[in-house]
Every structure is written in C-alpha cells, then in structure tokens.
Image 1 (spheres, rainbow, N blue to C red):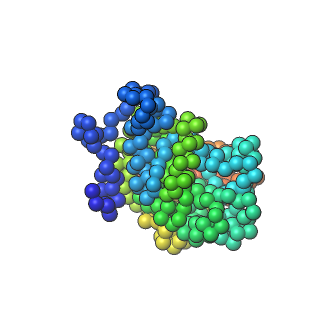
Image 2: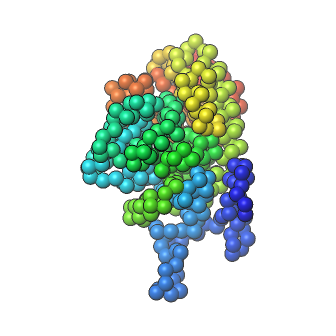
Length: 383
C-alpha cells in the first residue's frame, strides 16, 4: 500500500487492521500467556506474552506508524512508559525536565531516579537560554511537555531538539495532550515520544495504558530490552481497547478542541476567572509558536478562579463534568491539580510555578460546549 497522506485514513488503515488468518476486520485479542513451539531449535515471533503478543504488537505498530517512528512499545500505564524510558539512564547521568512537569514524572525524577544515581534539574523549557544554562557535562537527556500540564506552556520543540542533537542529548517528549494527530515530535528531531494512552488515544476512560515511539533503532533495542526485563507490559484486552479508541481519535479531537476554544473564549471574559490558560487564545504567549509546530491547540485548558474557595465551590456544584483525575475522555473532566495530577509537587514549589489552590484544569469532551460552560459558570453562582 502506498503511503497514506490523510491522517483520518491512516488511523484506520495502517496495515494491521485485518486478521490474515480469518479476515476479521478487528485485530483478535490473543488472550494467551504462552505459545506452542513447533521447533525449539528455531526462534519464532511469539514465545511468551511478556516478550511479545500479537495484539500488543499490532498496537505498537500503530503508534510507531502514527508518530513516524521505527518502533513502538505498549506499557501498563503512562508512568510505566515514562519510567522505563528514564531507566535508559544510569549512575552519574543528568536529566533536565520542565519545572511544571506532570506530577508523576516529577515524582519519578525527584524521588526514584536518585536511587539509581540519576540526577536531575527542573528548568523553564519555554526558554532555550534557560536550558543552555542548566545543561551540565553529564546531561544525557531532556524531558519536554508542550503544551505543559497544567499551565499549557509551549516550548519550541524544533529548536530544542536541534540544540540537543548537536550536543548528543536525548530528547523525550510527552505528547499526551497533543496526540500524533496534532503534533509529531519525531518529525522535529525528538528521539523518543511518550504517551499516556489512557487519555486521548484510548479516549473513553476505560483503560490505563502507556505508549512509546522512537525513530532510533538503537534506542528501540534498548527500550525493548527494558520492557521485557521489567515486564510492565499492556495486556491484550487493554491493547484492543486502545486500538479501538485510536480509530476515532481525529473526530473526537476535532470536536473537543473546537469546543475547548469556545469555552476558553467565554471564560476569558468572565469577571470571576482571574486567568485562563489555553494556547488557542491569541492572548496566550505560546499561541503563535504552537500554531507553527502543531495542527491544533488541543482540548485541555486550565483556569484560575477568583479564590480557592470559589474553585472548591465549582467542583462541588458542577453536574455535567466529572470531577476526577485524568483527562482525554469522551466526557468532560474537571481536575484539581493541587490534590490530583500535581499533588506530588511540594506546595511551595507549586505556588512558585503558578499552580495555585484556585487553579482548575478542564479536559473538554464531546458534550455541547455551551452546556459545559454554562454548568461551570452556574456552579459559581449557586448558594
């Protein structure tokens, strides 16, 4: 098959959608732990499901193709994916990461990696100058989020990737918010892309999954070794659910980010909302940059209520949005970063970053944007 240009077609016709044995138009769920070996003197594709499973392989092929990589890997969660990638490094290595990085990644770097002798520093990745000042002789990697979670800050991925490549520094991009539909970091020269596939890729709040893609055969071999050694693989049932979700990624993202734009514009004009963070707004400092390096602005926004008390009132009164951890589902999800996604970051550090007790993050789903906006705004007024 010739290379597919349109992403919506690619989502459905990468080449693993039909079962070659039966013609089934959905990848079978190979719910099996081990595989019969016809000849033990010869290697075969599948021997034990920790090392490889046909359903998982189909999903791994899909994420590699969508990101434009040479290999993909499916893990039991987004943090299993990120943690495995961070364990590519060892004693004496130094890693840079955004100051406002996702709380799970912050916890892994600040509390766990040090036990393996891996050092780190958090830096403002929206400034290449700040990155250059933070780099050390033993800096081996930089983790990036763009837009960041939860303040939606935009980093210049092409510039940072080019800078890192000149210095032999590996770039690891968490592409969860954008998905490969809107942004493909490997095209900018990134080395590794990580997803919490729990979010927009699976898209239905019914699976926990992580995905990794790389454009380097050398890194692919190292990641596979760790995936097999650590064993934090994604089970075949969850692989199938993730593939099912990916098929509708474009139509879901198109609708959700259109709605996010409308909600952000409405919130920006509300007197009881002190600040709105959404790169689709022309007032956002990263608006023009993201427009250049992505094909949309995503479906996540955050906003700061007038007071922390008002933020808590909103969460207790909303009726349509789920008040919950996570994002990227077909339903809108309202989160409270200080006790949810970023609880692992000390309160003082959160305050310095602007992650206040009045900040709420909204992942916009497929409901009417007017209904979601009205529900949240009405919650501000209820007694």
